[in-house]
Length: 479
Image 1 (cartoon, rainbow, N blue to C red):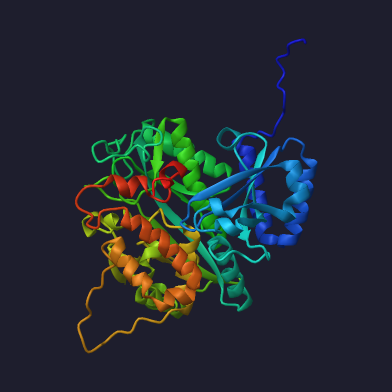
Image 2 (cartoon, rainbow, N blue to C red):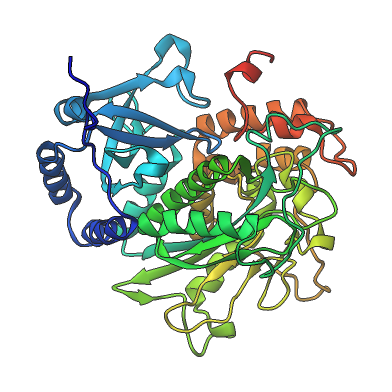
């Protein structure tokens, strides 16, 4: 057989400029056309484009761990309406006795992806998990969030938008979290700080590379920079409809991890990977729009916010202790809520104090929003967004006793306190349903039981290696 230097296959590979242009076009279509129209158009595209070999479907488990599976393109276009998977292998979904669940592709979420990060010849889409009767599964919080957003639209209450500020750390070595011990903690790769990094040092090269990938995937980048702590980074991307924004959070963490691995490092989103320095947050900036108008804005309102916005703030503050387990979902998250390191552990709202759970940024009629600062980057973004929306619309407003001096309230100091408040909350049960509430609680209780009850002054091995974004099948077999 004669040898040849020609490639065996010519799968789709595009430059980053081409990807950005195409993905921005697809983003615009997702906002202008109906889901049925988009499905028809993209299905025809998949059938026609021979250089695409696979469709990657993405979904998240109950705790927010990201999962992906590839379907052969030819199989997918024939069977996309009847896709099943083993739900018993994914934490928080079905039991072994009734393991099969369905996946329904969200065609409006399709994107073309950089071949050097995801592999050549692939497109990605997010999917919703359905039960046997094609009903959204009760612990698939992406599906639950999408359903709630649709309900708000039908009731003409507004379209929620979100922008996330997700902080992370770049540490030395691949799989650094799995290899973490108290004797061999994370090794930080930079001693710089806020906005301070040489143009081509390791941290800045990582930030630049990750930003390039995000830009190509239509994140609409705004700014990226080293954060306050050494080895800490933050890459900001544009305001989006809330479901798309949560998808971007999951892809953001995935891209950062993948880029870091190519540099023989680890991008970690543990809330507090090292003591004595600032931790990682995931500030969620939320607003509501009606007919393209930001209804959180009122030029005559207090701090430029409308009564709608202040009502949501009051309800979120009132229920803050009982939803803390959702917004701060790991043992490690409660280390971050330390006021000595600019952490927002006070249940109050302020336009200036960054120790407040909710901040009101300076804004105008387009950018008026509320910033929930107490959310940790390891929270399930769909569940966190759902809890914020449902609490903001359906919770009870905070009642103030004007006859007494206002007392500062604080968020729970440990996951054990957060579990207790979550467990006894009838509001959380009405918000999530009893089954979803109990199932989520079971995973949080299990990780709490595997960690020391007192946090102490050093990060413990158990709170890292049993973390829900880190654990793998080998570790699960030990408990």
